[in-house]
Length: 348
Image 1 (cartoon, rainbow, N blue to C red):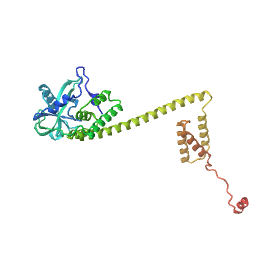
Image 2 (cartoon, rainbow, N blue to C red):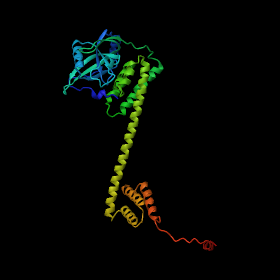
Image 3 (tube, rainbow, N blue to C red):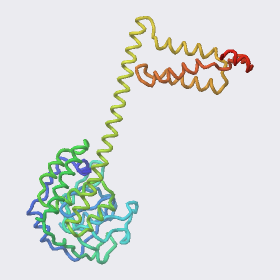
Image 4 (cartoon, one colour):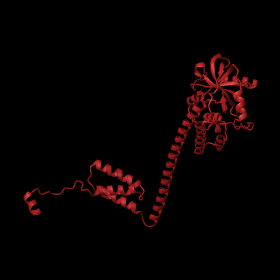
């Protein structure tokens, strides 16, 4: 989650892009979209109203569109591709619902790529594609949000929960900067909060598109909260696994270190009693007239015993098992007396 914080351009000339203010939100809400917009298809990215994101453009059509719009300070229409692998998306390859955007800055990066900073404005639906060259252009219709009561207790609780879960995710993700937590906590607009987090949450583009297409803010917020809880559960599970693995490795390293020290001390004192114990087992095993299966079984378990730490419970169990195998009378038979009268005499 919040990967874009890590991927934002850091050029010296780049200005800090502030969070959306209440005045900005009013400006976006009252903004009237033109009837036609140039359409910029994006791969793996969905732009939400109010959100500011960096994108890298490389396709000729995209570069031409950006240059024209930036030079004339025009709005553009940003839509997501259905299939990221399509290099030259046609009208059927893009979603119908997108977000108008203003180009805040165009940056030429050291690697030769062009990075564009976009700010989402208002949602729209494509009614008709009216141009395909030199880039897509469409007749669009602005989409207005369904009215809701923002003071309703349930809605307020959902928004508060979104902030809480998002902050937990940030705190448990060491690769996410603390600025993300500060940003989330200081967003006052519920609509922008949902857009901001939806832009950065680590989910497939198709899921983000579903959020964008939902026209009811309360429903969209609840859907986002569900996705955030799934993300939090996944992060917590991953952290538990990593902590357990780390603990196991540390324990093994500690045991190895202590065993090495123990060996050195025992060598100084005249030998390792555990090695002598194992050597005795090997000598006894050599005298046994076992079949091939029994011999292989014993040797396998003896090797396992050698690798164990003498201080562990498993060592004692394996040792006792091997000693029992050695004590059994393999291929040794007694002469039985099958005389009933003699047996009766002994018993009487």
